[in-house]
Image (cartoon, rainbow, N blue to C red; front, top):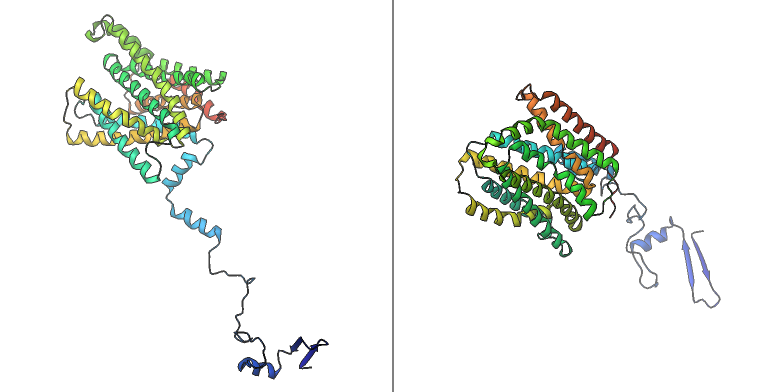
Length: 393
């Protein structure tokens, strides 16, 4: 039937059901009748769209996997590697420390290459700290972080800056009064002092394996620089700068630099974790070190205007120093100090391999150098093999 009418008893409600193919329906759809009181749809059956809310739409967005593949292909391998080293691996803390040590070695090699003219140490420190300050400020502004760090971390940042510059100040004085090998050996007491300070200040657990690794690495340093120390101690009597009590004062000053350097490592870790940004620790150090180094430069030394080649070399060393300091702060932030500090000894091994590879090492003391490098490699390899320690607050 074309129509079926259903009405109740009082004829108050009438329901009409029509066949879709009925000609009457087509006429009513094309010419709406307002007199009948029926509700006419805005679109006829033929004009209605052919989709509903359950219809799939494939053209509005690309699949998620395709977007991820495109974005990954657009990122350069250098950025991917940097992101993986920074926070993409469970070994990120140890990797940051290893890269920091490698950058310090590159700085040492470049400083020899760029040494066209002698520059006073405080002048070098002032320019380097200035570059570190500028780069850290730009970095914090670019990522939208507060320049002076959060309010609850500012005391730690100030303490880190003061203790860090005190360590640098005493090291500069000691390296001017001590033979180079003795100053290097004293500088590598820093990891040992940092581990002891972390046990006292940060209450980190110091395991027997950690103590054995640090002792093995430090003995490796003694094996490497032992013959040089013996020769220099035997000839220091002839040196006018090391007569009498001057040598003892210089040793004490170098030891004080190592102690304050170890405490500075603990403050770097605490400040980086509190501020959640290791660059803040680098900026705070630059804020204190720049004016202090400028005062020492003009009051204790005579200013030397560097040549253009020397200035370019000092700027390059400043850029490398910024990267090394940021990586050092990041490694200390992520890793236990005793493990992170032990990786710093890899710089000694790399420097000795460079000396042996370039043929600058003499035949005397070659065996002790190899033994020292082997001890350090065994210690650092064991530290990396055991993996990162679970950090407890």
